[in-house]
Length: 472
Image 1 (tube, helix red, strand yellow):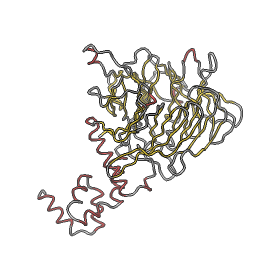
Image 2 (cartoon, helix red, strand yellow):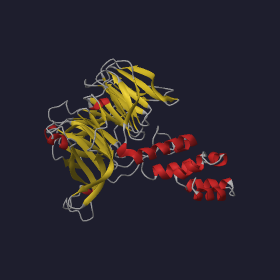
Image 3 (cartoon, one colour):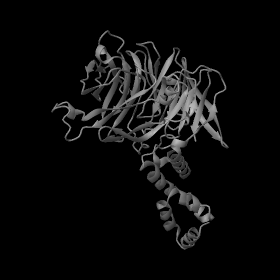
Image 4 (cartoon, helix red, strand yellow):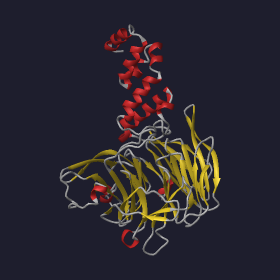
Protein backbone atom coordinates (compact mmCIF):
# COMPACT_ATOMS: atom_id res chain seq x y z
CA UNK A 1 0.00 0.00 0.00
CA UNK A 2 1.42 3.47 -0.90
CA UNK A 3 2.73 5.54 1.99
CA UNK A 4 0.33 8.38 1.11
CA UNK A 5 -2.60 6.01 1.54
CA UNK A 6 -1.23 4.81 4.89
CA UNK A 7 -0.93 8.42 6.06
CA UNK A 8 -4.53 9.19 5.01
CA UNK A 9 -5.84 6.12 6.83
CA UNK A 10 -3.99 7.15 9.99
CA UNK A 11 -5.65 10.56 9.79
CA UNK A 12 -9.07 9.04 9.06
CA UNK A 13 -8.86 6.85 12.17
CA UNK A 14 -9.22 9.97 14.32
CA UNK A 15 -12.47 11.06 12.62
CA UNK A 16 -15.99 10.18 13.71
CA UNK A 17 -18.19 8.10 11.42
CA UNK A 18 -20.37 11.00 10.23
CA UNK A 19 -17.33 12.89 8.94
CA UNK A 20 -15.91 9.77 7.30
CA UNK A 21 -19.20 9.17 5.50
CA UNK A 22 -19.08 12.71 4.09
CA UNK A 23 -15.52 12.09 2.89
CA UNK A 24 -16.59 8.83 1.24
CA UNK A 25 -19.45 10.63 -0.48
CA UNK A 26 -17.01 13.09 -2.05
CA UNK A 27 -14.30 10.52 -2.89
CA UNK A 28 -13.96 8.68 -6.18
CA UNK A 29 -15.45 5.22 -6.60
CA UNK A 30 -11.98 3.69 -6.82
CA UNK A 31 -10.94 5.40 -3.56
CA UNK A 32 -14.01 4.03 -1.76
CA UNK A 33 -13.33 0.49 -3.03
CA UNK A 34 -9.67 0.72 -1.99
CA UNK A 35 -10.40 2.15 1.45
CA UNK A 36 -12.93 -0.55 2.31
CA UNK A 37 -10.21 -3.19 2.04
CA UNK A 38 -8.13 -1.70 4.88
CA UNK A 39 -10.28 -2.50 7.92
CA UNK A 40 -13.74 -3.58 9.05
CA UNK A 41 -14.80 -0.06 10.08
CA UNK A 42 -14.16 1.40 6.64
CA UNK A 43 -15.71 -1.65 5.00
CA UNK A 44 -18.99 -1.15 6.88
CA UNK A 45 -19.04 2.61 6.29
CA UNK A 46 -18.40 2.13 2.57
CA UNK A 47 -21.48 -0.11 2.37
CA UNK A 48 -23.93 2.52 3.66
CA UNK A 49 -26.73 3.61 1.36
CA UNK A 50 -26.03 7.33 1.68
CA UNK A 51 -22.55 6.82 0.18
CA UNK A 52 -23.75 4.90 -2.88
CA UNK A 53 -26.78 7.12 -3.33
CA UNK A 54 -24.37 10.04 -3.75
CA UNK A 55 -22.10 7.99 -6.01
CA UNK A 56 -24.98 6.87 -8.24
CA UNK A 57 -26.26 10.41 -8.67
CA UNK A 58 -22.83 11.91 -9.34
CA UNK A 59 -21.18 9.16 -11.40
CA UNK A 60 -24.18 7.85 -13.35
CA UNK A 61 -27.12 10.24 -13.49
CA UNK A 62 -25.15 13.51 -13.53
CA UNK A 63 -22.90 12.19 -16.30
CA UNK A 64 -25.86 11.13 -18.41
CA UNK A 65 -25.05 7.41 -18.37
CA UNK A 66 -27.93 4.97 -18.91
CA UNK A 67 -28.74 3.47 -15.48
CA UNK A 68 -28.49 -0.34 -15.43
CA UNK A 69 -31.26 -2.51 -14.03
CA UNK A 70 -35.05 -2.29 -13.93
CA UNK A 71 -36.61 1.18 -13.95
CA UNK A 72 -37.56 1.81 -10.33
CA UNK A 73 -37.56 5.03 -8.26
CA UNK A 74 -34.17 5.72 -6.66
CA UNK A 75 -35.79 5.87 -3.22
CA UNK A 76 -36.63 2.15 -3.49
CA UNK A 77 -33.09 1.01 -4.35
CA UNK A 78 -30.96 -0.54 -1.61
CA UNK A 79 -27.29 0.26 -0.94
CA UNK A 80 -26.24 -3.02 -2.58
CA UNK A 81 -28.36 -2.31 -5.65
CA UNK A 82 -27.04 1.25 -5.98
CA UNK A 83 -23.44 0.05 -5.71
CA UNK A 84 -23.96 -2.71 -8.27
CA UNK A 85 -25.63 -0.34 -10.73
CA UNK A 86 -22.93 2.30 -10.30
CA UNK A 87 -20.07 -0.13 -10.90
CA UNK A 88 -21.78 -1.70 -13.91
CA UNK A 89 -22.52 1.69 -15.49
CA UNK A 90 -18.91 2.85 -15.04
CA UNK A 91 -17.51 -0.41 -16.43
CA UNK A 92 -19.60 -0.16 -19.61
CA UNK A 93 -18.73 3.52 -20.05
CA UNK A 94 -14.98 3.03 -19.59
CA UNK A 95 -14.75 -0.11 -21.73
CA UNK A 96 -17.46 0.54 -24.34
CA UNK A 97 -15.26 0.57 -27.45
CA UNK A 98 -13.24 -2.43 -26.21
CA UNK A 99 -16.07 -4.72 -25.12
CA UNK A 100 -16.51 -8.32 -26.19
CA UNK A 101 -19.70 -10.40 -26.33
CA UNK A 102 -20.47 -13.42 -24.16
CA UNK A 103 -23.60 -15.61 -24.17
CA UNK A 104 -24.87 -15.77 -20.59
CA UNK A 105 -28.18 -17.63 -21.07
CA UNK A 106 -30.08 -19.43 -23.82
CA UNK A 107 -33.15 -21.58 -24.30
CA UNK A 108 -32.95 -25.30 -24.96
CA UNK A 109 -36.33 -25.79 -26.66
CA UNK A 110 -36.27 -25.34 -30.43
CA UNK A 111 -39.38 -23.23 -30.95
CA UNK A 112 -39.59 -20.63 -33.71
CA UNK A 113 -39.39 -17.13 -32.23
CA UNK A 114 -40.89 -14.34 -34.36
CA UNK A 115 -40.04 -11.41 -32.08
CA UNK A 116 -37.97 -10.76 -28.94
CA UNK A 117 -38.39 -7.73 -26.69
CA UNK A 118 -36.20 -6.64 -23.78
CA UNK A 119 -38.13 -4.83 -21.06
CA UNK A 120 -35.78 -1.97 -19.95
CA UNK A 121 -33.55 -3.28 -17.19
CA UNK A 122 -32.10 -6.28 -18.98
CA UNK A 123 -33.70 -8.98 -16.83
CA UNK A 124 -37.19 -9.36 -18.39
CA UNK A 125 -37.84 -10.65 -21.90
CA UNK A 126 -41.04 -11.22 -23.85
CA UNK A 127 -40.96 -13.50 -26.89
CA UNK A 128 -43.62 -13.80 -29.59
CA UNK A 129 -43.93 -17.32 -30.96
CA UNK A 130 -46.67 -17.25 -33.61
CA UNK A 131 -49.85 -16.80 -31.52
CA UNK A 132 -48.17 -17.03 -28.09
CA UNK A 133 -46.49 -14.48 -25.85
CA UNK A 134 -44.03 -15.90 -23.31
CA UNK A 135 -42.68 -13.87 -20.40
CA UNK A 136 -39.13 -14.74 -19.28
CA UNK A 137 -36.89 -13.65 -16.42
CA UNK A 138 -33.08 -13.73 -16.51
CA UNK A 139 -31.98 -15.08 -13.12
CA UNK A 140 -28.50 -15.36 -11.64
CA UNK A 141 -27.39 -17.77 -8.92
CA UNK A 142 -23.75 -18.18 -7.84
CA UNK A 143 -22.61 -16.41 -10.99
CA UNK A 144 -24.61 -18.67 -13.33
CA UNK A 145 -27.40 -17.20 -15.46
CA UNK A 146 -30.50 -18.98 -16.67
CA UNK A 147 -33.84 -18.14 -18.27
CA UNK A 148 -36.93 -18.75 -16.16
CA UNK A 149 -40.28 -19.06 -17.92
CA UNK A 150 -42.77 -16.99 -15.92
CA UNK A 151 -46.04 -17.02 -17.85
CA UNK A 152 -47.68 -17.50 -21.25
CA UNK A 153 -50.55 -15.82 -23.12
CA UNK A 154 -52.31 -17.13 -26.23
CA UNK A 155 -53.78 -14.75 -28.80
CA UNK A 156 -55.06 -17.45 -31.18
CA UNK A 157 -53.63 -15.58 -34.23
CA UNK A 158 -50.09 -14.61 -35.23
CA UNK A 159 -49.26 -11.60 -33.01
CA UNK A 160 -46.96 -8.61 -32.82
CA UNK A 161 -45.88 -6.74 -29.70
CA UNK A 162 -45.11 -3.05 -29.03
CA UNK A 163 -43.76 -1.46 -25.83
CA UNK A 164 -44.40 1.89 -24.16
CA UNK A 165 -41.19 3.93 -23.91
CA UNK A 166 -42.85 6.10 -21.26
CA UNK A 167 -43.84 3.14 -19.07
CA UNK A 168 -41.57 0.09 -19.51
CA UNK A 169 -44.03 -2.22 -17.76
CA UNK A 170 -46.80 -1.70 -20.34
CA UNK A 171 -47.10 -3.56 -23.66
CA UNK A 172 -49.74 -3.81 -26.38
CA UNK A 173 -50.49 -6.86 -28.52
CA UNK A 174 -52.38 -7.20 -31.78
CA UNK A 175 -52.48 -9.34 -34.95
CA UNK A 176 -49.27 -9.25 -36.97
CA UNK A 177 -50.83 -8.80 -40.42
CA UNK A 178 -54.63 -8.85 -40.18
CA UNK A 179 -56.17 -5.35 -39.92
CA UNK A 180 -59.33 -4.43 -38.03
CA UNK A 181 -58.96 -7.06 -35.33
CA UNK A 182 -58.38 -7.08 -31.56
CA UNK A 183 -55.82 -5.18 -29.49
CA UNK A 184 -54.97 -5.82 -25.83
CA UNK A 185 -52.88 -3.73 -23.43
CA UNK A 186 -51.06 -5.56 -20.62
CA UNK A 187 -48.93 -4.68 -17.64
CA UNK A 188 -45.99 -6.95 -16.87
CA UNK A 189 -44.75 -8.03 -13.47
CA UNK A 190 -43.65 -11.31 -11.93
CA UNK A 191 -46.53 -11.20 -9.46
CA UNK A 192 -49.18 -10.43 -12.09
CA UNK A 193 -47.86 -11.34 -15.55
CA UNK A 194 -50.06 -10.29 -18.46
CA UNK A 195 -52.50 -8.32 -16.32
CA UNK A 196 -55.08 -6.87 -18.74
CA UNK A 197 -55.36 -3.07 -18.65
CA UNK A 198 -57.50 -2.63 -21.75
CA UNK A 199 -59.04 -5.04 -24.25
CA UNK A 200 -60.42 -3.88 -27.62
CA UNK A 201 -62.36 -6.50 -29.54
CA UNK A 202 -62.02 -4.44 -32.74
CA UNK A 203 -59.66 -1.61 -33.68
CA UNK A 204 -58.99 0.02 -37.07
CA UNK A 205 -55.85 -0.88 -38.99
CA UNK A 206 -52.81 -2.67 -37.58
CA UNK A 207 -51.13 -2.00 -34.25
CA UNK A 208 -48.20 0.42 -34.72
CA UNK A 209 -47.25 1.56 -31.22
CA UNK A 210 -48.24 2.68 -27.74
CA UNK A 211 -47.23 5.75 -25.75
CA UNK A 212 -48.66 6.74 -22.37
CA UNK A 213 -52.44 6.86 -22.93
CA UNK A 214 -52.33 6.68 -26.74
CA UNK A 215 -52.67 3.58 -28.88
CA UNK A 216 -51.32 4.11 -32.42
CA UNK A 217 -52.83 2.16 -35.32
CA UNK A 218 -51.59 2.15 -38.92
CA UNK A 219 -54.43 2.67 -41.40
CA UNK A 220 -52.36 3.83 -44.40
CA UNK A 221 -53.13 0.61 -46.25
CA UNK A 222 -56.91 0.88 -45.90
CA UNK A 223 -57.44 3.55 -48.57
CA UNK A 224 -55.87 4.29 -51.93
CA UNK A 225 -54.46 7.78 -51.35
CA UNK A 226 -55.14 8.82 -47.75
CA UNK A 227 -55.07 7.27 -44.33
CA UNK A 228 -52.40 7.68 -41.69
CA UNK A 229 -52.24 6.83 -38.00
CA UNK A 230 -55.39 6.48 -35.90
CA UNK A 231 -54.89 7.28 -32.21
CA UNK A 232 -57.14 5.87 -29.47
CA UNK A 233 -57.17 6.83 -25.78
CA UNK A 234 -56.89 3.43 -24.14
CA UNK A 235 -56.95 4.97 -20.65
CA UNK A 236 -60.45 6.35 -21.29
CA UNK A 237 -61.43 3.37 -23.51
CA UNK A 238 -63.74 5.59 -25.55
CA UNK A 239 -64.71 5.15 -29.20
CA UNK A 240 -63.35 8.48 -30.47
CA UNK A 241 -60.06 8.76 -32.31
CA UNK A 242 -57.54 11.30 -33.58
CA UNK A 243 -56.15 10.94 -37.10
CA UNK A 244 -52.59 11.85 -38.08
CA UNK A 245 -53.20 12.09 -41.84
CA UNK A 246 -50.91 10.82 -44.58
CA UNK A 247 -50.97 11.51 -48.32
CA UNK A 248 -49.69 8.11 -49.31
CA UNK A 249 -48.69 9.00 -52.88
CA UNK A 250 -46.49 11.78 -51.49
CA UNK A 251 -45.40 10.47 -48.08
CA UNK A 252 -45.36 6.71 -48.66
CA UNK A 253 -46.21 4.07 -46.08
CA UNK A 254 -45.79 4.36 -42.31
CA UNK A 255 -42.36 3.36 -40.98
CA UNK A 256 -42.12 4.36 -37.29
CA UNK A 257 -42.80 7.14 -34.79
CA UNK A 258 -41.12 8.96 -31.89
CA UNK A 259 -41.99 11.50 -29.19
CA UNK A 260 -39.79 14.59 -29.19
CA UNK A 261 -40.12 18.12 -27.79
CA UNK A 262 -43.78 17.54 -26.79
CA UNK A 263 -44.70 16.50 -30.35
CA UNK A 264 -45.35 13.25 -32.18
CA UNK A 265 -42.94 12.64 -35.05
CA UNK A 266 -44.14 10.17 -37.68
CA UNK A 267 -41.60 8.75 -40.11
CA UNK A 268 -43.08 7.83 -43.47
CA UNK A 269 -41.02 6.40 -46.33
CA UNK A 270 -40.34 9.81 -47.91
CA UNK A 271 -40.63 12.31 -45.07
CA UNK A 272 -41.24 12.96 -41.39
CA UNK A 273 -44.40 14.69 -40.15
CA UNK A 274 -44.65 16.67 -36.92
CA UNK A 275 -47.94 16.76 -34.99
CA UNK A 276 -49.12 18.15 -31.67
CA UNK A 277 -49.94 15.48 -29.10
CA UNK A 278 -53.70 15.23 -29.63
CA UNK A 279 -56.56 15.22 -27.20
CA UNK A 280 -58.63 12.28 -28.38
CA UNK A 281 -62.38 12.99 -28.41
CA UNK A 282 -64.78 10.70 -26.59
CA UNK A 283 -66.68 10.15 -29.84
CA UNK A 284 -66.11 10.81 -33.51
CA UNK A 285 -62.83 11.76 -35.13
CA UNK A 286 -60.54 14.79 -35.05
CA UNK A 287 -58.01 15.27 -37.87
CA UNK A 288 -54.70 16.70 -36.66
CA UNK A 289 -52.86 19.40 -38.58
CA UNK A 290 -49.25 18.97 -39.70
CA UNK A 291 -46.99 21.36 -37.80
CA UNK A 292 -43.97 20.64 -39.98
CA UNK A 293 -42.98 18.20 -42.71
CA UNK A 294 -39.32 17.33 -43.28
CA UNK A 295 -38.46 15.55 -46.54
CA UNK A 296 -35.80 12.84 -46.45
CA UNK A 297 -32.95 12.90 -48.94
CA UNK A 298 -33.97 9.43 -50.10
CA UNK A 299 -36.80 7.02 -49.20
CA UNK A 300 -36.25 4.95 -46.07
CA UNK A 301 -37.47 1.58 -44.82
CA UNK A 302 -37.26 -0.49 -41.68
CA UNK A 303 -35.20 -0.88 -39.60
CA UNK A 304 -35.26 2.67 -38.28
CA UNK A 305 -34.26 4.07 -34.88
CA UNK A 306 -34.35 7.37 -33.01
CA UNK A 307 -32.03 8.65 -30.27
CA UNK A 308 -31.47 11.91 -28.41
CA UNK A 309 -28.08 10.74 -27.05
CA UNK A 310 -29.31 11.65 -23.57
CA UNK A 311 -30.00 8.74 -21.24
CA UNK A 312 -33.42 8.41 -19.74
CA UNK A 313 -33.33 8.97 -15.97
CA UNK A 314 -34.91 6.72 -13.38
CA UNK A 315 -38.47 7.66 -12.40
CA UNK A 316 -39.09 10.13 -9.59
CA UNK A 317 -41.53 9.53 -6.72
CA UNK A 318 -44.47 10.48 -8.96
CA UNK A 319 -43.32 8.02 -11.63
CA UNK A 320 -42.27 10.70 -14.13
CA UNK A 321 -38.86 10.63 -15.80
CA UNK A 322 -39.11 13.07 -18.70
CA UNK A 323 -35.98 14.88 -19.85
CA UNK A 324 -35.77 17.85 -22.18
CA UNK A 325 -33.76 17.14 -25.32
CA UNK A 326 -32.08 19.52 -27.74
CA UNK A 327 -31.61 17.20 -30.74
CA UNK A 328 -32.88 13.95 -32.22
CA UNK A 329 -31.02 11.62 -34.58
CA UNK A 330 -32.92 9.44 -37.05
CA UNK A 331 -31.07 6.45 -38.53
CA UNK A 332 -32.66 4.15 -41.10
CA UNK A 333 -31.95 1.74 -43.92
CA UNK A 334 -32.47 3.41 -47.31
CA UNK A 335 -34.67 1.65 -49.84
CA UNK A 336 -32.12 2.04 -52.63
CA UNK A 337 -29.12 0.46 -50.88
CA UNK A 338 -29.47 -1.77 -47.84
CA UNK A 339 -25.73 -1.93 -47.16
CA UNK A 340 -25.65 1.40 -45.35
CA UNK A 341 -27.56 3.54 -42.87
CA UNK A 342 -28.70 7.08 -43.70
CA UNK A 343 -28.85 9.51 -40.81
CA UNK A 344 -30.50 12.87 -40.20
CA UNK A 345 -30.64 15.06 -37.11
CA UNK A 346 -33.20 17.55 -35.83
CA UNK A 347 -31.40 20.52 -34.24
CA UNK A 348 -32.79 23.82 -32.89
CA UNK A 349 -33.04 26.79 -35.23
CA UNK A 350 -30.41 29.42 -34.51
CA UNK A 351 -31.28 33.08 -33.92
CA UNK A 352 -29.94 34.12 -37.31
CA UNK A 353 -31.36 31.12 -39.17
CA UNK A 354 -33.58 32.50 -41.95
CA UNK A 355 -34.18 29.12 -43.56
CA UNK A 356 -37.93 29.63 -43.38
CA UNK A 357 -37.94 33.26 -44.41
CA UNK A 358 -40.25 34.33 -41.60
CA UNK A 359 -42.57 31.36 -41.99
CA UNK A 360 -45.03 31.45 -39.09
CA UNK A 361 -45.03 27.63 -38.93
CA UNK A 362 -41.39 27.33 -37.85
CA UNK A 363 -41.82 28.71 -34.28
CA UNK A 364 -44.41 25.98 -33.61
CA UNK A 365 -41.61 23.43 -33.93
CA UNK A 366 -38.34 25.41 -34.05
CA UNK A 367 -36.04 22.76 -35.49
CA UNK A 368 -34.29 22.12 -38.77
CA UNK A 369 -33.18 18.82 -40.30
CA UNK A 370 -29.45 18.21 -40.79
CA UNK A 371 -28.38 15.47 -43.17
CA UNK A 372 -25.48 13.53 -41.68
CA UNK A 373 -22.92 11.33 -43.38
CA UNK A 374 -24.20 7.78 -43.96
CA UNK A 375 -22.72 4.84 -42.11
CA UNK A 376 -21.32 2.05 -44.27
CA UNK A 377 -19.50 -0.68 -42.30
CA UNK A 378 -18.31 -2.55 -45.39
CA UNK A 379 -16.25 0.13 -47.18
CA UNK A 380 -13.01 -1.76 -46.55
CA UNK A 381 -14.70 -5.06 -47.29
CA UNK A 382 -15.95 -3.73 -50.65
CA UNK A 383 -12.39 -2.77 -51.55
CA UNK A 384 -11.41 -6.38 -50.95
CA UNK A 385 -14.05 -7.70 -53.30
CA UNK A 386 -16.74 -8.70 -50.79
CA UNK A 387 -20.38 -7.89 -51.39
CA UNK A 388 -21.85 -5.38 -48.92
CA UNK A 389 -24.33 -6.83 -46.44
CA UNK A 390 -27.85 -5.52 -45.88
CA UNK A 391 -28.76 -3.96 -42.55
CA UNK A 392 -31.32 -6.29 -40.98
CA UNK A 393 -31.61 -4.81 -37.48
CA UNK A 394 -30.96 -1.50 -35.74
CA UNK A 395 -31.55 -0.79 -32.05
CA UNK A 396 -30.61 2.55 -30.45
CA UNK A 397 -31.20 3.52 -26.83
CA UNK A 398 -31.95 7.06 -25.72
CA UNK A 399 -28.30 7.47 -24.64
CA UNK A 400 -26.96 6.79 -28.14
CA UNK A 401 -25.73 3.31 -27.29
CA UNK A 402 -26.99 0.59 -29.57
CA UNK A 403 -26.30 -2.23 -31.97
CA UNK A 404 -26.80 -2.80 -35.68
CA UNK A 405 -26.74 -6.01 -37.69
CA UNK A 406 -25.35 -6.09 -41.23
CA UNK A 407 -25.69 -9.51 -42.76
CA UNK A 408 -24.65 -11.73 -39.86
CA UNK A 409 -22.36 -9.24 -38.11
CA UNK A 410 -23.33 -7.34 -34.95
CA UNK A 411 -21.64 -3.97 -34.42
CA UNK A 412 -22.05 -1.45 -31.61
CA UNK A 413 -22.43 2.31 -31.51
CA UNK A 414 -22.17 4.93 -28.81
CA UNK A 415 -22.60 8.69 -28.41
CA UNK A 416 -19.90 10.87 -29.93
CA UNK A 417 -19.21 14.08 -31.81
CA UNK A 418 -20.55 14.27 -35.37
CA UNK A 419 -19.14 16.92 -37.71
CA UNK A 420 -21.47 18.67 -40.13
CA UNK A 421 -19.83 20.92 -42.73
CA UNK A 422 -18.91 23.66 -42.83
CA UNK A 423 -18.39 24.23 -39.10
CA UNK A 424 -21.11 22.56 -37.03
CA UNK A 425 -20.70 19.77 -34.49
CA UNK A 426 -23.43 17.80 -32.72
CA UNK A 427 -23.59 14.84 -30.33
CA UNK A 428 -24.99 11.80 -32.09
CA UNK A 429 -24.55 8.02 -32.44
CA UNK A 430 -21.13 6.94 -33.74
CA UNK A 431 -21.02 3.44 -35.22
CA UNK A 432 -17.97 1.22 -34.89
CA UNK A 433 -16.27 0.52 -38.21
CA UNK A 434 -13.80 -2.08 -36.93
CA UNK A 435 -14.31 -5.72 -36.13
CA UNK A 436 -17.73 -7.27 -35.78
CA UNK A 437 -18.69 -7.95 -32.18
CA UNK A 438 -20.81 -11.06 -32.70
CA UNK A 439 -22.23 -13.34 -35.40
CA UNK A 440 -25.98 -13.94 -35.76
CA UNK A 441 -28.26 -15.58 -38.31
CA UNK A 442 -31.53 -13.76 -37.70
CA UNK A 443 -32.48 -11.93 -40.90
CA UNK A 444 -35.25 -9.91 -39.20
CA UNK A 445 -35.24 -6.65 -37.25
CA UNK A 446 -37.74 -8.03 -34.73
CA UNK A 447 -35.49 -10.93 -33.74
CA UNK A 448 -32.92 -8.71 -32.00
CA UNK A 449 -33.33 -6.32 -29.08
CA UNK A 450 -30.90 -4.33 -26.94
CA UNK A 451 -30.82 -2.97 -23.39
CA UNK A 452 -28.53 0.06 -23.14
CA UNK A 453 -28.22 0.14 -19.34
CA UNK A 454 -26.93 -3.40 -18.84
CA UNK A 455 -25.22 -3.71 -22.22
CA UNK A 456 -27.17 -6.85 -23.11
CA UNK A 457 -28.83 -7.92 -26.32
CA UNK A 458 -31.12 -10.84 -27.04
CA UNK A 459 -31.07 -12.74 -30.33
CA UNK A 460 -33.59 -15.21 -31.75
CA UNK A 461 -31.80 -17.61 -34.07
CA UNK A 462 -33.25 -19.32 -37.13
CA UNK A 463 -32.76 -22.67 -35.36
CA UNK A 464 -35.57 -21.71 -32.97
CA UNK A 465 -33.60 -20.96 -29.80
CA UNK A 466 -32.83 -17.50 -28.47
CA UNK A 467 -29.91 -16.33 -26.36
CA UNK A 468 -29.00 -13.45 -24.08
CA UNK A 469 -25.60 -11.89 -24.81
CA UNK A 470 -23.68 -9.69 -22.35
CA UNK A 471 -21.17 -7.05 -23.44
CA UNK A 472 -18.26 -7.34 -21.02
